[in-house]
Length: 294
Image 1: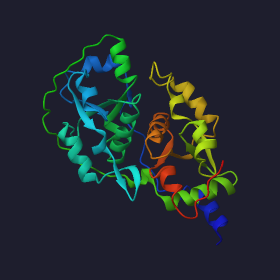
Image 2 (image 1 turned 135 degrees about the horizontal axis):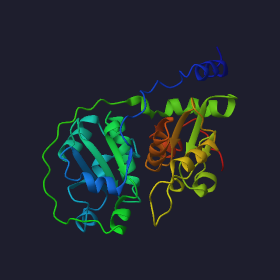
Image 3 (image 1 turned 90 degrees about the vertical axis):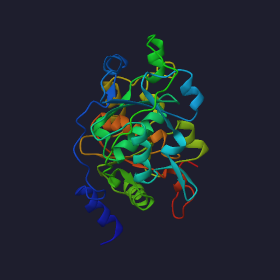
Image 4 (image 1 turned 180 degrees about the horizontal axis):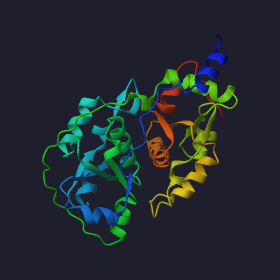
């Protein structure tokens, strides 16, 4: 069977990528009002994900634990922002008090982009159904005049049992086939999304053939108010790009960080979504990986 026939058959049977489990049961997005009302709940763990400890110490949501960015990601083969080993991630989250039964609420720097990457990481570890992003992050919390702390207490160590889900991560080899199918297989239930800015997508770096552009920042109301747009608006945005029930969606960016935001948004909408973690950083350095838009 030639490549076209093989990939057409695989796409028709939804077998090109391994199946994912059912949608998450817990709320993926929580409001500042909800968090303020549940800070005293011992089962709620609040994590701030960031690059600068001084920014955290200047004022953080009470009971939050600082998650250093450089411990959340690693470089592999010259490709930045890859997933570290599950054992390393377990130690990181356990050190901040995360246990199997914890309800984890995430916020962080870069308009909550770092928190979105942490959410993807927890989803990879099998804990996504117990994790949520704080809608609007620290900006909204401060704008509402809510309490901030400056003295962090050492959290009690948690006990987390990772159940890694490698099926949510797309490899370079799979992405080669997916790109070919997106270009050549008519009617495939497949959508490739590049989460970078339009300038990066079209001009500066080009993109993976077959991908469409959906800038991650446009999922939010804006930089001044980094809360998510209403669910109905998000759904229309992605439907206009071709997202439908039964569509397998793969997101990427330059190094898998911006795409984590898109991954979260699409999961929030209930889509079957995966992340090409190597993203364009890996694609552009590899052999037999053409780029469109140049």
